[in-house]
Image 1 (cartoon, rainbow, N blue to C red):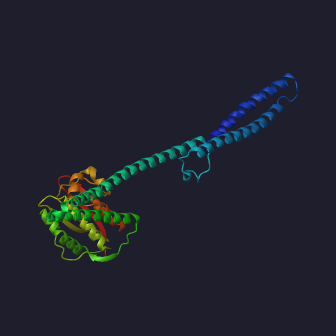
Image 2: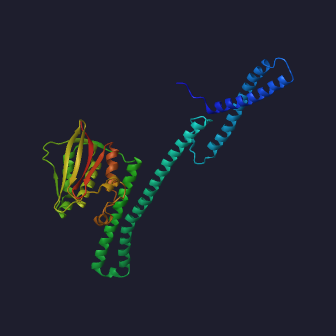
Image 3: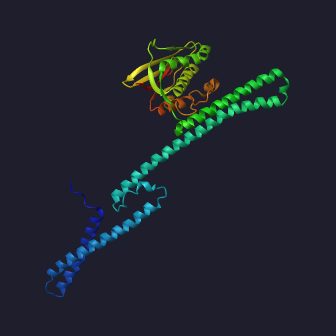
Length: 348
C-alpha cells in the first residue's frame, strides 16, 4: 500500500512549482523580448534548477518553522508528563501531532476524573474515620467529666459510668486494631502462615464462638448438610477464621429474628472449594453492593452505628481473601437475603 505524501512535502512541491513557473515565465519573456538565442533550452534548465532549489529551501524552512513551534508546544504544556512523549521523536506532521495531542488530552481527562473520584473517596474516608473515633471518645469524655463533677461520690453511678467508659475505650481499641490490620493488609506487610486444616471443623468452631450472639436474635447457625468427612484446605487458618467470624457476625447483625445463617462448602474446580455464607435477612439494595467492601461504608448508617462494629469488617475480609490470591463474591436481593462466598485452595 503506497504511503500518502506528507503534507509538508506537498506544500513545498506546490510552492516551488508556483515560484518556478512564475520566474521561468519572466525569464523566457525577457529572453524573447531581447531576442536572445536558446530562449527554449535556457528556461528548461532554469526551471529544473530553480524548482529543485526552491523545493529544498522551502521544505527545510517549513520543517524548521513547524519544528520550532511544535517543540515550544511540547515544552510549554506544563501538565505534560514527560513519559507520554519521551519515546517518540518530535513530529512536524500536523495530523500525527493532532492525534498525539488528542490521545494525551483523553488520557489526562481520565486521570483527572480518577483523581476526583479518589479525592471524594478520601474526603468521605476521613469523615468516616473522624466520626467513628469521635463518637466513643466523646462518650468516654462525657462519663469521666460527669464523675469528676461530683458523680464519683455515688458508688452506683460511679460503677455504671466507669463500665460505660470502659466499653467506649474497648470500641476505640477495636477500631484502631482494625485500622492497623487493614493498613498492613493494603501495604502487603501481613505475612500469611499457610497450613492445612479442616474447613468444616473451623466453621464449627466459629459457630460455637458466636452461638450466644446468634441466640439473642434467635438465629440458628447451621450447615446446609451433614458433612461426615473433613474438607482439607490450604490457607492461613487464623485469618480464615477471622473472615468467617466477620461474615457470620454481619449475617447475625442484619438477620431477621428467628432467621437462619447457613454455611455450605462445595467443590468449585479440581483444586478449589467455595465457602458460602447465606442468610434470610433484610438483604442489600443493588446500588449498595459495589461499595460494600469499602472502608467504613455503611448501607444503613443509623442502624449500623446502633449495632456497633468498626465498619471495617468486610474490607478486612476482602483484603485477607485477596492476600490468599482468592476471590470473594456477594449476591443479595433486598427483602430476601444475602450470600457471601469465597474460594480457597484444596490441600493436596
